[in-house]
Image (cartoon, rainbow, N blue to C red):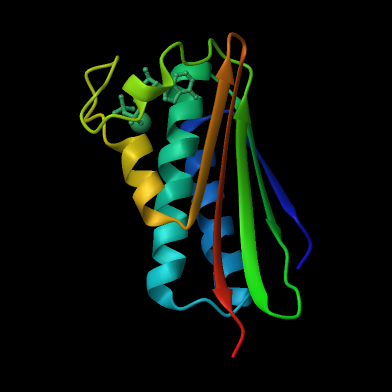
Length: 133
Ligand SMILES: Nc1ncnc2c1ncn2[C@@H]1O[C@H](COP(=O)(O)OP(=O)(O)O)[C@@H](O)[C@H]1O
Ligand SMILES: [Mg+2]
């Protein structure tokens, strides 16, 4: 599959990113539960970009090899950054009156989760993978 890049600028772009993730997972042969997990994680990360950074990007790519199928998603922005990552990853922590479950929830839904942030840059990389039979 070709990689898909989604510009995150307005609320409806969250839905586009979510749908693109689901489509990639479906086309790569992941089951519907995995499709939903990936779509939901993307949705939370993309929503955070719109809410806290204003705009950013979501890049979805697949990396099949001999033994496994892997989909990687990089959600990136040049907003204010996250000063305390540990706090941000804590279930229930929110700076906005939200539920504070977006980041920890997304982490639980995928096999790989990495977050890096500095002032003016936040990048979250997630991936799902499965072994080929
Ligand atoms: N892209 C981002 N840029 C800046 N801050 C962020 C970003 N994503 C998350 N955060 C910070 O991490 C906190 C936790 O995010 P999250 O778990 O999604 O909960 P919620 O969005 O409900 O507050 C947010 O309240 C915000 O302070
Ligand atoms: Mg959130």
